[in-house]
Length: 349
Image 1 (tube, rainbow, N blue to C red):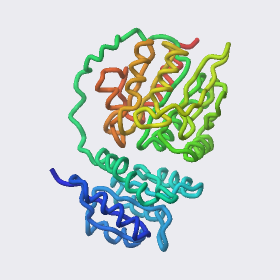
Image 2: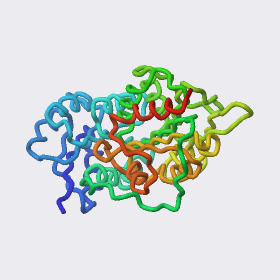
Image 3: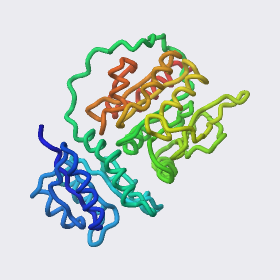
Image 4: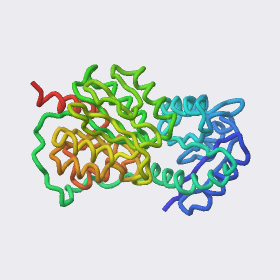
């Protein structure tokens, strides 16, 4: 099987060396070149023909954003992973890069253990992501596999929409929210796998770019119709009844599926509170977070939508749900907003 060809672009010689050493140790990956800035990288792209580019954000002469803009003109589908520092400026620039078409991002660890932490992130997180992004498309979806979860009737009134996503999520959210009605008459609760600071910036950008009321969740915040809450980075978000109210709760319980925030805790708690009134939506992302939560939603009689493989950056999270036979519909990203609106509105007076 051909190895995945990677081009590394970073102005730090130390980071280039560390990334190259770790990637080269994986038998599935071949580092076909390095570059110290975007200008050099653009010149090398046609020479080395990479399957994926790892791109720094802040570089001299031509930074990551300018490089990405230029790259996308000639290579619209080439996967690009941003590798940037965890700072306010770096987080904002990374979200800019995702908007410009970057596939995903990873943060460079800082502090005393920076290099060793960087090696760990590359081995445990970046390499699996490269493998997932560059994996060949699967065969057509087989008939739903039995899961032991009863397919209960799901014709009830939708009371809440819960969304889980990871790799490729910010752009997927932007497209879905652009297609939703201005005032959806139910709350939307979102878990996007992101670290602190990124989730706040993501909420601010969605609020500025769409017609929805979007905020990063605060502990104890009211869950209200027409309002969207995004789980805070490094905190699980769940919901609970408090008299006649429903509140969003944040906690630092252990990670689930190696994630915090994780999708499963939100989905489980939503099913406990809203029962058959849950519409769960699983969008692009690596791993299987959301699968167990969807089983609980199904047991409660809720409804489930999953993004299809063709429009997913990585068909991990929605793929597991679809293959388990839990999804009521498997849809392209362009059809998700309309289906949410139809299901929320169809059972309302």
